[in-house]
Image 1 (tube, each protein chain N blue to C red):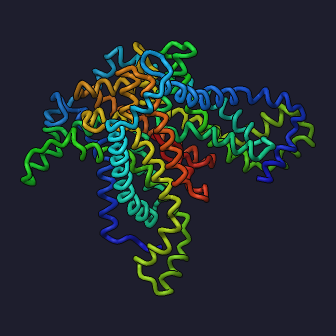
Image 2: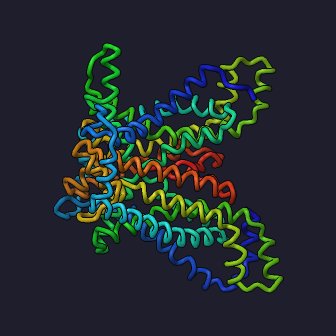
Image 3: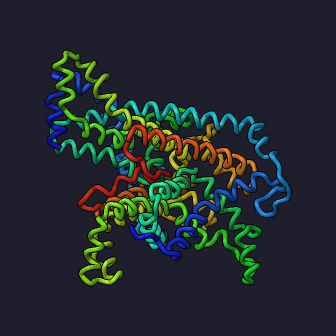
Length: 266
Length: 286
């Protein structure tokens, strides 16, 4: 392979600097004892302390985590069922149709998902708040779980099932001891993606959250609209560390389990 | 595909009814959260503020106000996609040439996992009147400029947000490219530019297409960045929908705009979905 020259190296360096500059800029000023993001006065932990002292913020963080874990768990369950159903579909046309339906929510812009879910919840009478946010997060995470699990299912050698049956396994055994262990990396990848979708979602939550309930993204939005607050910076410092740890952990596990590469998410 | 069919036939689930009971939750999800929402959007687009059946929302959409909004939204989405592509393609290309390309790719991906709101918030500080960008301009001698709340800041921040989503499919396409083809092209006397134009670009066009798809559609529907960075100066289709639903509470008009956004989405997907579906495995984009 040809090595890259100086100019390409410089180009890549600039791209990487621009990509990371805003993030480190945020974290840098989270240690500023001054009030804003321009003049660095002196080093302080006070904004981090402020994050942990703010009861409201802590509740919001907990809400966000609970929603993420619950929605990831439930969407993974339903997504795996969906992937199994699609995989075992006899009719090829039907199969493709269901797959297209599955992918609609993946390509739909958030505004559309948010607006249409808002109409749906108002119509069937779900109160806007915890329940509506949780249901929305489950709903928009299901298709990605299906997408993560399906390739694993088609990778599976059907003779495995034959062998299990010949050896006297029951239907339930085949499912729990052959199929599920085999597709486990896909399930894991799906769960992880669902988790991060939920943690990061802003637009859909913004539509269906109503008053009184808030997730971190929505809270940061309303804080940012009123101007700069270094509490947000401190929060972003914490989130950055957690995110990097999660990504590294995920890739490490991924390598071990050879799950499908999950790719970019937002 | 045939292997799947075999698998299906051999699966010891003689009882079809039991099998369909298992898939009820998934089927219910499709019905409730995929089909019903679209139907509801279309249904609501035929009602006015007082709840009467009307076509006036559609008539309104074709007035100059909304047509202008649609064209400007497309223009901004076009600019955002174009700049993303111009920056992403060389980046992806150079990364495939590096020694530890998977590591570099991971480094490109990590910022995309950071909460979108936080990245946007960072630019409020960076581009502010007393922020580092203006300090730099002053050092260079240009002097303080209003950077925040301009078209420039909007396009810049959007490109920043979308860049990883553009890089990934292009990287995958370039990575799959057989290097022997480039050697062959060079051996046959083509210069670098001809090689790129005739060999590399056509073979990676599907990656480019899926990159365009994952950038252009969300760019049409941005609404958070328009509020925080463009200061309501830029109105996209997404902003208009949010405005109608959450501020003016005119769900009918909001739904009408949403119907058109869905239509645009399908048209764009028609143009950008390559025959080979391999390059689209880049996860979800929002």
